[in-house]
Length: 119
Image (cartoon, rainbow, N blue to C red; front, side, top):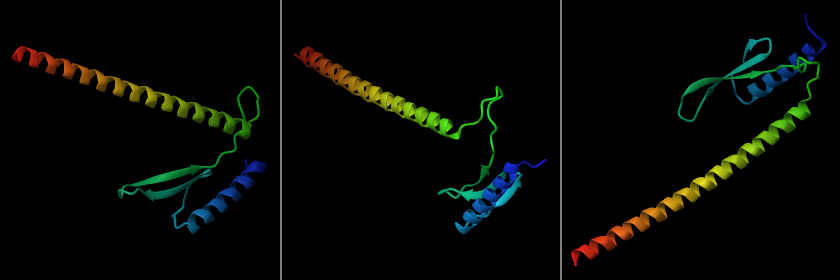
């Protein structure tokens, strides 16, 4: 049974198919809500990109789907992820510097011991 939004989804899918074909992609219809594009990466490996068109209804507890809220939540998660990665990179850089300094001090101490024993 088709809903009133199925017509809208099908129209958008048709528009996207025209767009992808205009960009020189082969476009395959692999499902009622899917378009598939054969792709090749810079190393010549072949794969497929599947684009799914869905009209979410919302949660099981009756809350309607809010795309703006979901997008905002995604942006916040991405920002937190980036901050965590930055913090991790900073900690790693500090550890590398600290380890290099410790190795340098150990090498200097070893060299000093060796010169003292040579005397």
